[in-house]
Length: 323
Image (spheres, helix red, strand yellow):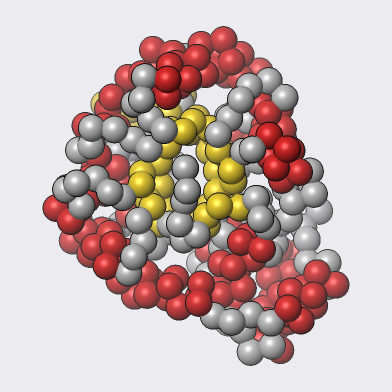
């Protein structure tokens, strides 16, 4: 599937970190469509159904023919819950609790529930969400075995039946990508936060494997959860890196990158957004957006001319966090 270079991630309109009104979410999607953005990535986990529901409502109004490309995810079932307040990073989310389940039955049930929330007859790209040791720790082998023995087959069956066009994984770590590519065939990998100005761990090994096997790569989290999304980060508060406050070393590296960008007259967010697209294996980058102003900013950042000398300077400064 041919993807546009710029898509929209929807975790933010699922109330990640802060509440967003229904109207603000609708305006964001409408502004994205008006700006020519035709690819939207979402997941049941984002606001526990809230992001999918809001995206579906907006697209039903503005894209009734279903021309927009949608990717969503499986691997968690949403169980009704009375819990309130901030949970798993989401504020004022829908009344459900996400429960990991990578079995075939859960994959099918999650897919059907997403179709209802998205108000669509089909989903273009289906991704297994958050496999890997980073998320599951000691439970990783059991979840991986369930996926390989059961869930992956269900995803293939959905693709073969024409219910989805492409299947893959949506993860935050490189190791699970390599592990799965050695075992199963994937069409696409959505890798969040692992190919950015602050973290280039994926480029040397994963992209080579993907190129050999014809696997497309989508980069999520180009701003590493927000730390690269603005200039003047040295005096900023409330910054996030990988969904938590950045440590002093990470903050220092980010400031160092910003200083280099400023030397060439380029904003930090523009460089951060365009950095993943330097790789020919990257099909699309999907920053989160809230509000028409952030949509407009994303379009402007993507169009910002960036001299080769800036990329060379960033490479020479070795602005890579070593795991």
